[in-house]
Amino acid sequence: MRVAASDVELAEKKHESDGEIPVKRKSISYAKWGYFFIAPFFIAYAIFSLWPLITTVYNSFFENYRIGLDQVGPNFIGFENYINFFTGAKGVPVWNLISNTVIMWLMGFIPQLAVSLLFAYWFTNKRMDLKCTSIFKSIIYMPNLIMASAFSLLMFSLFANTETAPINNMLLSIGATTEKIDFLANQWSARGIIAFMNFIMWFGNTTIMLMAAMLGVDESLVEAADIDGCTPNQIFWKITMPLIRPILVYVFITSLVGGLQMFDVPQVLTSGIGVPNGTTKTLIMFLNDNLYSKNYGAAGAISVILFIVCAAFSLIVYYFFTDRTLGGAKSFAAKKKKKGV
Image 1 (cartoon, rainbow, N blue to C red):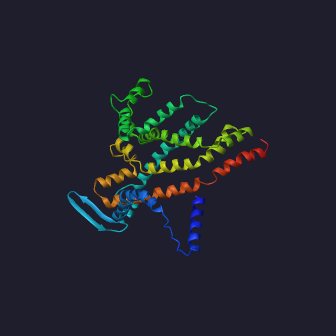
Image 2: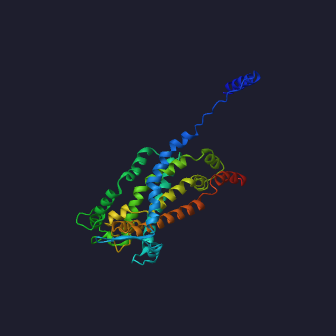
Image 3: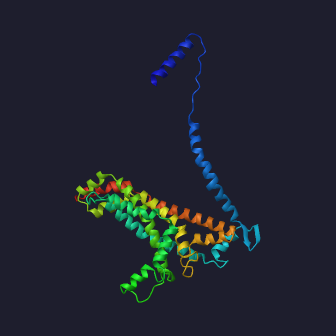
């Protein structure tokens, strides 16, 4: 390319020396093609995401619902939908809905993260040298492929208070109880079933992501720490965990957003009622009730509040968990060596 450019420059200089006007070559810009190829994404985003978000925010400031066959509104009422939501002016225990959602998410996420970290460490640890790991990976990921509605119906059949319910019959046969237990009539057992379902459905996906993160850890850091006398626990907590922190942040944020949007499992398992006494009713289930009753103003306000809460929590998690990752892990082995371990 440099030779060709030099030839062009020499030719232009020759033309100038001969008194001829040099011909300016038009440069070709390929930058516009980049915009052409990314345009479909932005067009689809604007139509299917941005515009619905704008209309949701717009509708949240209006009174717009149906009573029987009569349509009320749309009438502009400002922030009244937001005030009604937080004060419970419409008889809605909003703080109960928030606590239900957060409790059930934590009950499922904490064991999910613990088990996923354990499995990911086992599958990626060369010292353990586990056999048939590909089969185990496929098995733990399979529940993620099952539809939530089908899984909810299965769990309902297992824990139902009927003559053919397997769990109750098993407990009676081993003498663990003398009468059938109505699991969905107790708030903690009902919440536990929902949390267990979320755990089973998602821990396989979390394990795969954490395995990918652990496989990306530089082996030289682990070997150096091992030579310097670090224990496996020290290597895991001081080297592996800091280096996979970006993936942990991603898992935490996606799980948090998914937990706050929990809907399908409790909706199907409790028939949308949130039994017992609304203790398993989530924010999105309440949002669905407003959409079903055509109360678009209240539904819009709930959607906007949920969007702000998810964004705020995500920023908090990102801020507190994304510092001192690689530097701390790399300096750990050096510190141990200085101390003469």
